[in-house]
Length: 453
Image (cartoon, rainbow, N blue to C red; front, side):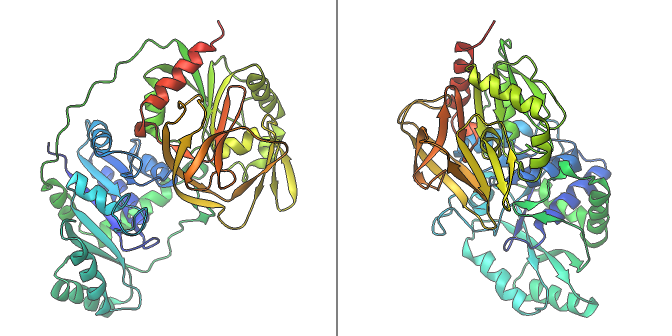
């Protein structure tokens, strides 16, 4: 199957691959291309920028959480009606889940998709050394098809000539672009970039597109993407759209924006999705279940506290056996309060916990759990995989009832995750529903069981 595609990978984190990826996406859109964006790895923030840059939802391609078939399936399925796929990598090209195997790395996904790679490298304050660095990436795994390099943060014209010559003559890699050190406002907070949905970003995206147009050979990138070899084709089963018999509320707004779009799509095969704004809405709409993703409740804690009417409605929904699934920020929201620098902000209050913000990561990375008791998304003894990424820590106010035993990761206390009470399940782990499609079916069947006519 022919899908024009290119991976924008980095020698390591914070070399500018997100800036270059979204600038390239917007530049191609401005040229009239229909661009389908993808993000390698378990990221929620970068895909938000992809979406605004292209007008299409970005899809996560994660070889730790998804098997090869599911990864290729989501890649193929979501490319429909697009002209070119721009795939942003994660961390360094070869960084993996265990630092030994390639599992979960950008490189592994590149090989699965037979995708050509452009490597973004920081050329600041080096010249000939750039060749040694790039040659290492080129030779480390010859099966990774590194086509060339974009040199970022280059100094004056003389410096640019030196690093370009070193790259092409010594490392034998083509230079697709040389980007000078420029002040670009890419604001960060503790989990990475500030999400696109919290900011007006069109001006930023156009500025980045102009930067890419000026310093990067876009025509050569497009040519390379269109010369990508045919990808292994899987016959995709058309999702059976069931007549919606249930309504699932999804709190999706500036506060709670950490959702895999594939998760929403899977749910929409069985249910009508009703979006809820935790800051603006005062009442819950008529729904049969509630899904609260991750995000930044700590940033909006004061505003969430002020919307007591919605918090009370959610509390009553939980108390009356409403089915609720919450992840990370959603877990924090369902607790009694969030503590930030000694200040305490009242939340929904259904779960007997407080969460306290810390200045350092409390947990980060891939997770593997074993289900110790059946719950709304998994049966007993099933394996659940996902990732966690949080600065908050749970303070139990009474003994907690857990459903997951941590095999890899941290969860709530290093041993368990998945706090359950009545028909509510809240965990730190973010689960990609395509990692196990039984998750959605079980959740939907559970909702139908408790549906109120």
